[in-house]
Image (cartoon, rainbow, N blue to C red):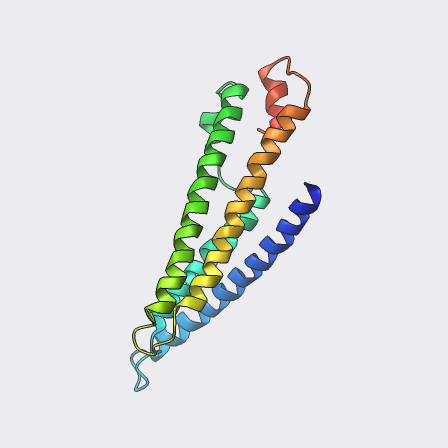
Length: 177
């Protein structure tokens, strides 16, 4: 399990680097497009399509690394007053639900790749095929789904390996809440 987590961490880091590059390109593209819009150049052709694609890279490229670092924002003011057993059950159930949704989303995106490729979907003005962008985003979504799955498995394994808890606080410490 530890080797799989390290491997996923490396993949998530690569995905994060892609998101960072996409953010830089997006900032550069938006700046140049805005500055040239009122000139004779008239802005960058198809900048809106590229902006949409880059935003997907940024969002889905960052989700997996944030999940692997357990950096998501939680409702601590609600969660801290609940019994640890309920927190554990919620953590597992929400993790499983999130994992299922992300796997369904990645499956739908795999179908979109084939539809884009066979339907020859392209950007509006430059007619650049969209399926290569969809492949990258699909891989990022799949990385996020697998990271979520590993997170849920970690929670369940930690609970099964630990001795019985004497109190809610001990159980919360074991599951990382």
